[in-house]
Length: 126
Image 1 (cartoon, rainbow, N blue to C red):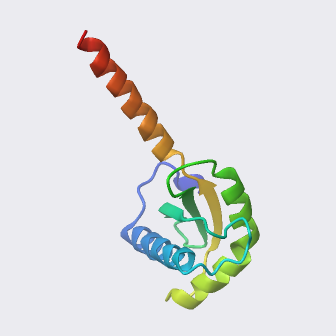
Image 2 (cartoon, rainbow, N blue to C red):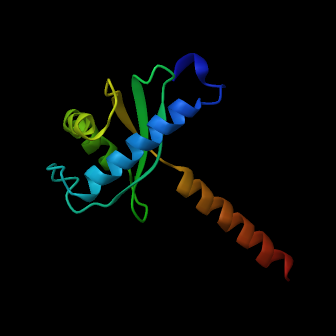
């Protein structure tokens, strides 16, 4: 999100981002997306980051239970106009931000760290 990469988000940004995250979760839970690649896939929306001007949002998503997120991201890209339209209906914002989707790799990273810690603990017990 540009110039503010090192800055802490404002309370307003955090509130709007969380509102968008909840709306996305609701849209995905109701199964409103008609894309065949998104049918029968549960999606975890772990975080939404929004620009200071509230015009651009990035949603970090991953398939529930893990797996390859790239097909999910591609399908979400195709569904973005519909998702943005639904966000406009659900949110109480003056303007609906443009939204993009990125794979959330934090769960994979946490699993790798956990594995390293488990192997270190089991290795020290010998």
